[in-house]
Length: 404
Image (cartoon, rainbow, N blue to C red; front, side):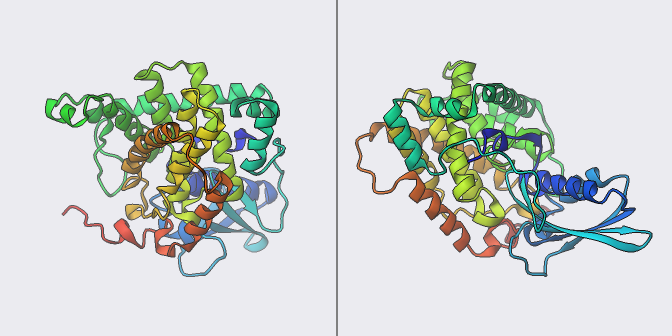
């Protein structure tokens, strides 16, 4: 299993699979054919259907410049993977080379017929059941397990990840006005965070700070929606769930940065199982693959903060994902705004609830282990009708009524 360096990536939003991935593929092609004076890029599947709203064309252009290039959105041609892109290079009007790439989610890519530099797999096990047994036998927790195989060097990366997460929230909390794009969606994080309505406070049943949790998630995702710098956790579209929970733990519950760093490591190793054995791409597994995975990760990290053992952490992660099974990915007009921003806020709250339920039911008999749940999540995501897998052709996107 790969390092957490490959899971938590810092970069510009609004979509890791639709911006980071295509950007990386563009760089690979440009490096492979440096003599090309013109490049044609053909986007298929989800990249074609939601690429403009996700700024895919902008991300590709930024890499290919100053080479002359043409970007085509082909939503009709059938492809095996929904995030497929073809590159065709020309020199003096003659074709000199082709490349087909796939953006598999979380900023990671594959290139057909061309082995690219493989990321070293640093972990001994690819399945949670083996990690569980190893930790039990060696009397270590999941953070110790991460350090055992990653080395202490990973701590520096996690510190940078945590700084970036905090900055994305703090920037979002300051912004006012409308988000970029044709929807004209108003930013809400600032207003939510500074809300002083006593009637609303009564609705929070003694926990008014939960308003902050929601505001943190909105803030992070509004930063993402405007193309700001965020962390794939595990994707850009789901970038607000884990940061909101961890920022809430720090600012409102009093946890320290070094505790948050450890929780991020635990959340990350849980996310790695979904990325390795399932999917974190909305185009492949619906939003359950993105926000559902983020909820599972956040639940595991939050459970760890309170000193719970590996059994509770596993249970929390399972609760976090199972109650997102079948969640559609239907971004309105292709923008990572509706329902994406709000969805991260609800997932952040659900992650905390998942950890609480797992802790209070620590002796409950388990009928499924985390590996089972990851497999079922993947199968469920693939069973979704394609219109509910980041195509903007179903659900909220299909029935959206823009303001006149």
